[in-house]
Every structure is written in C-alpha cells, then in structure tokens.
Image (cartoon, rainbow, N blue to C red; front, side):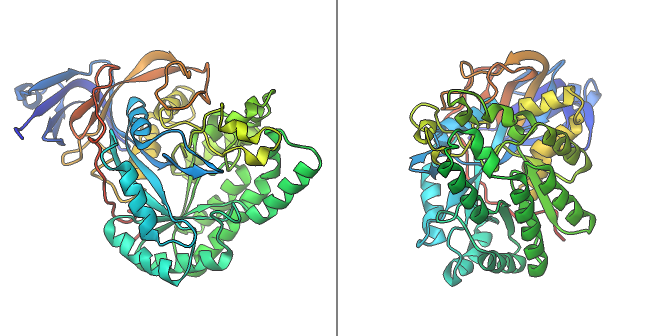
Length: 468
C-alpha cells in the first residue's frame, strides 16, 4: 500500500492535557507530528489530503468502554449489530468501542469470546476490543482468565444483579477478584443487590404495580449503594482493583468517594442517561416510560448534581454509554403489563460526545475534562493509551473535527442507531461532529458516511494503566 499523508490545518487541538492551535500531520494511519499553526515547520508540510479545521476543534476519537451490540437479553437481542452500532458510533465521534463478550452458564469463557469475535469480525466500521462477562465462576473459568489477559482481554465483568442469568454470589466474586489480583486483570462490577431487588419486584407485581416507572422504584438507590459498598470490601479483601460500571445514585457514588479517599484502586463510570434523564422519563404515560428502562435505573433528578460533581472531583473517571438498544415496537413492548419483562437498555453510542460537549457549554465540565472522561481515561483504564485517546505523535490517527457552534436537535429522524426511538428526542444541543478519521481513513466526511464494514480492527488491550 502506498504511503498516504493527511494534514489537518488550523484547528484548536484539545486533549486531556492541553489546548493548542496546531496543525496535525498524519501518515499511514498514525499521527506523526504536531506543529503550531502558521509556524515554519507546519507551513513546510505537504500532504495528499488537507482538511481545513479553522474554527473547529480537533479532538481524539471517543473511546466508549461499555457497549452491548447484539446482546441476548430477556428472550430478544439488542437491535444494533456490530455493523450498525459501530457506524452510529462513528457518526457520533467515537472511534473505539469495548463491547462485552458473554460466557453462558455451563460453557467455557473461550466459547463466549469466540462467538463475539465471530459476530464482530469483518463487520465493524471502527476499532473494537472486548471485555468478558463472567457468568459461571468455577475452577475451570478462573484458570481461563489468565489466558484471556495474555490475549489482550484484560477486564472481566461480574453481576451482583440478575439472579439466574448473570448473577455471582459473594464467594464467586471474591475468587474472581483474587484471580485478577494475580493476573493484572480489572474486575468490572454491576453493583445492585439483585436478590433483594427480586423480592421487591415480586411484591410490586403482586400489588398490581406493573408500569415501567416501578422498574425504578424497586431497584432502589440504597441497594445500589449497598452492593457498591460490598464490592469495594470484597476487592479490599482480595487486594484487587475494582471498576464500578454505570453508577447512577448519589449514595453509591459516596461509597466510591470514601474508598478513593482511602487511596484504594476503586474507579467509577457513569453514563449520559444518568446525567441528562431521570425518573420523570420513566414515568411517561401510555407505556412510553419503557423506552427508558435500563439497569441501574434512572434516578430522581437530584442525583444528577452529585454525578456531575463526581466527574469534576474525579470520584467518577469515565463516561461510557452502556449502549444496549431495544426497539419500542416488538421489544420493549414485551413488558406491557409486567415491567420486569421489559428488556433493559438504552441507545446512546451516537450521542455521548455531543451530550458531553453540551455539558461543557452548560458549565458542568471543562473542555479538557470532556476529552479526559470520554477519550483519554477510558483508553488508560483499559490498556489502550496512548495508541487511543489522545492526539500525539505515534498515536493512531483516530481524529474528530468538531464544530462547537453547530446547533442540532437529537431525534430518531436523524440518528443512525438501529432503534425506533431516541432517548433524547427533541433535545436541542450545540456542537456536532463534522469529519471523523479512524486510523487515518476518513469514515465521516463533512457529515457523509464514507467508511465501511470491515475497516475496524480488533485491538488487544494491555492492563489498566492506573495501577502500579
């Protein structure tokens, strides 16, 4: 393949560390140099393709460390395939996803991982990696964890929720944590007390409380906090790091903050739905609230203030989407008359970068913090940095030209996710992705999709870069 050079001129380059008016030179899929715009060095550069980024931001492609393409759940499958989901991610300025391969109970981890390799292979528009969902902790699966780490699958998700499906008890969790303490892997925890929640679900349904809003009422914030506390103590006993996924409640965040104040390797992620949506959406009439059923659930609006504060104080380090879309028609409707049968999950992989830019305009976070929580930290957390998550010589040329002044209205009419509703329907925001490069290849060109299924490559990951 002949050498190709791309030059991005005149933009404001924003990384987690700095903001600088610089030109960016790309060769053979990598960033090779940055130089001050207008400097002699920058002026001397020539390229096959020049992109004018005047009055635009030049930012690293987003790293979404929590997606579920084609996930089997509740008798159906998430509606985005690896092809449709990664294309939508590119439209939203995300150039790497880390999806979850699923081990089924009674099967080896290897079988689950191979099934996910097969789903994604040749279908992705952007680069991707995998975490492994551990559903069946036993001697054999614990041994497999070591091999997975060597293969570049360095994080393992366990569930304190969903008894009978993904649930692990405290003993199984402790054993997995002990193993990860030895092999360098990172345990990701869905922290909700699923055993207690199931009791409350049964009681609510028996009392005729069947609407979607009761999904939020039974999955109590205190049961998220209790499970978060328990996961932290088990991780301390095991001497293992812990990453708590989709933190939604102030009380759970408090548990993480206390642990971090003690110097423990405890990390927290939240998602745009917890920052921008609330139980008001879950309570929408005529079963419309089903669109907003996810777990952990949406919380009363006052929790948003605590989550934004957690992102500013670094008690929460990452914003991922937990993208897991189910169509309202035919999928969410499975739970009419019984909220416990509504497939859990929201679409969001396309909206994350834009919503977080809106948060910059709203004064919740700074521009550099936007890039930190959406690009740099997820890349470091999951062993992808500095290949991903920054704009620096040697990094993959995953680059987004972002127009910070372009207004847009989020809507199912204009999004590219394979789902029949938008969780943010009618929301007016400012800022839009204009052009996206994935490893130097233009996949979105001034709001035209020019990418292709199969461009995206599997990326083996190192271990968490926040650990000694």
